[in-house]
Length: 173
Image (cartoon, rainbow, N blue to C red; front, top):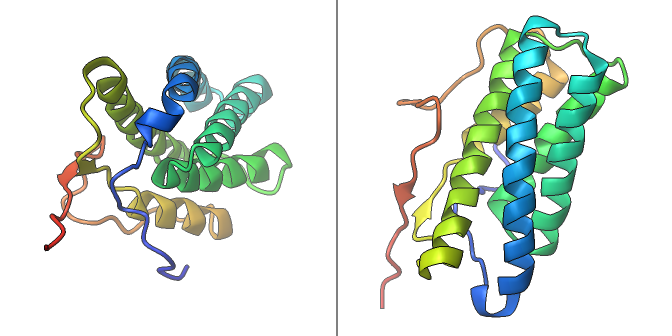
């Protein structure tokens, strides 16, 4: 899987123009994140559970669509790749395994951190100023799509369970 473009970047919310849409998306995204988590818990014990798989797929699909419309590039790109991976499982082209479920959970955690940035912007006017790392997750999900049996997926070091935001580079004047 090639490196490709880099998506580790600060999300640009365009808050003045998108406030109403972000309010709706925020509430919906929180619901979808809860659905993803509960469905992942089901899949962890029952990897063949179609209802749980379809619920996770629909949630990532919805987050992908709206984040794309709002030009939230890191979130949109990550959710697009996870949606594609889940679609392979839905169509019987790969079987879920603990490595895939872990990658989906880590992706959900990254999306949750980005949604947290939207929360701060909407509630306190604090625009995102940190990068939520997604490049390694995108690479992992793409690798699992072509090699679902990968036992160990290369991770950056250090690799926290939930991505920690890192300070964005300050542009030089």
